Length: 416
Image (tube, rainbow, N blue to C red; front, side, top):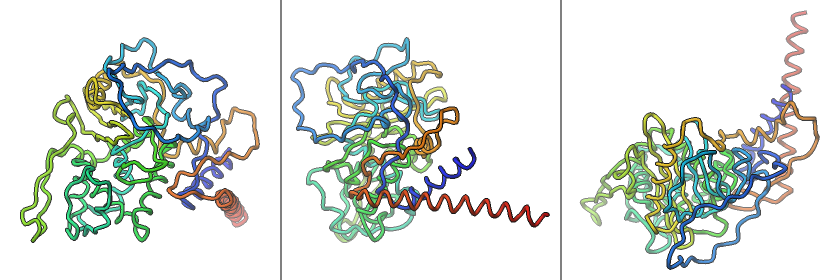
């Protein structure tokens, strides 16, 4: 068993470091019988919303639906037995409520279904780069940082302006600034620029176990093949809400953008655009999102009586109430549940990978090569490359184990 554990760890390290393009390892074998389907409580809107045609979604691999528990493998509703009635004003297509500290999933609607993130994508950008960028460094904004969809959300950064990284984070999270997202992604990607950051974002999602997430733009502006899920957003948010710097940024009410003479001699102030922050008891802050294709999305968290919950909402209309109010209604519902309530859990980083690599010791031994899922990087990786990565990882693991055995044998011989 110890050899198997070492082999699993070595393969995880080798494959994780070798490339950002290798797709995730299956987290679990599918259950023989899926949970019974219960439709999600979605209110009928009159007139019905006019939505653009969604892009084709990837085909689910059976194992990815069960990350976090077999009960989550549904496109419908999953709630604990004897749970109170859900809010009657939900127009969200998918949602999830979870405990930030224990990781318990309290309830969800289509937790692993593909949705479109809009600006909640900026949370993955933050998780990827917060540790890599010094908040005191100064970044010069380039014209290419301002090349994004006209009319979309922006801080108002100026080409040639020089702004501290901390100011860019505040502009990203308070004002949902796509200009701030572009500048941060360009700097964080090193020589590869924005493409380098996108590869890092996809690798971060993969290592978390966020297998429905694929980033194509750092800001969340729509792009071909860009998806996430309510479960994945909760995984990302859980790591962020454990960080003091993120909590400080996301809960800041307003900040001053520094002057950039001569074009902007005075600077200007921006305010936090999350309405939940001032309107909901115990709010820790949240992130709104909207595009024509994604509709309204929202991720937010709150604390009551020492209990911290997170809610994620995808594909909502701002009817019958705004998406953030649908989120707060779900938080109220979550806080009404007993602390022991659970229908699944948010996995720890790397846990799903190790679960696949280290079989249940009580299960019969089976020798089979794990299937290779679709790539999660911004550029497709040829199958040959994937298998080479696995081969190199396996060889590295064998060499590592053989070296440990030789060292142990040498110690025994010297003692004799």
